[in-house]
Image (cartoon, rainbow, N blue to C red; front, side, top):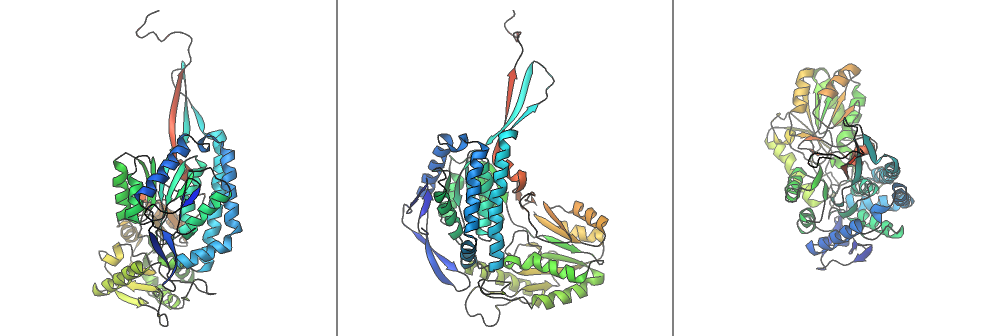
Length: 492
């Protein structure tokens, strides 16, 4: 199955027959070969999705009927929880405990949007009060159409769920292009779709590289909406491609999120949340709080405890019991992170701990948890997303300076603040220019709450009812209800 594409309800070889090596980042060994889809395969998949939307049964089903499919997907994911999690570890490298959490969240996402699909049966129309009583008007929510979804490698199945679940709930059809680095659990979703007899063409999965499969998907004239999660440079290309046909677009892009810790904070709690905010998933998290600002009175104490605890984190294969930091996803990403750390050194930053391949790891893309200090606010490592287990720590003197430094970024995905003073937390949270703000914590994410960023961190929101709205158009329907003629041109 891994070397095939899922199009129009069937598994088929790519038209050009190419394959891509899928590598286990903990061992650098090839797990399998995935199909290398190209523009011909994308065209076939988009046309299947177009027919399924324009002529198939899917958009005609009630929300309750679609919800049954969504819940069936969730049940299958749950039934295969351990197998899917182990596959995620082998493909992505993350610790098994984290992968299990991801799989649970993916199943929960499908269940959540099943509920919203059911609600569409009663709330898809809204009456509008208008001034002229001779007319009646209503707003109707309808599916946007064919969706081209491109997902990243850091949360392979979960990021697929974030797009596929609300799109299906809204009655859209989809062409999914998962990352070529981590396609395996996305392909398993195709197997699940086949098992639950999802109507042909509703979900199509084309694996392949960005240039060969991603770009043709963004440029295809029969795609109504593009949903992308990934880097800012690629997001810019997606936006430019979508502009040619004025496609509906939602983008969830990069981040360089700040975490402001005030001097009244409990130091042990602060260190725990700082670590969770950057070392979870090897720091390969768009919302990672990788810029830590600590108020001067406790800066030295926080830095001391952070470097001590970071050095203790157990590194290893994600399948090994007790592992809390697995390998980086790929050789390319591994090299970029080490290059960023070296650039930080050359620019004058201090490596307080980490920054190297850990001792005893001769293979695998492993990097020690890294804490950097003494960088300037205009340095590369402070301003640019590293997307690895690298945190920058800087002192600040007062609340005004903390907010200024936190907001001084082209990104605005997330931010965090820690203080015993709840009024100050609320004040600072409101001052952050970011789409997601955490108070006295970092990184908790809930399906029910909106997710997305300000500035160059993206456009639109995923999750919650906002995520469903991503895949719906709003239509006005206005009726003239009076018995008398309009009489503007033809006088009675």
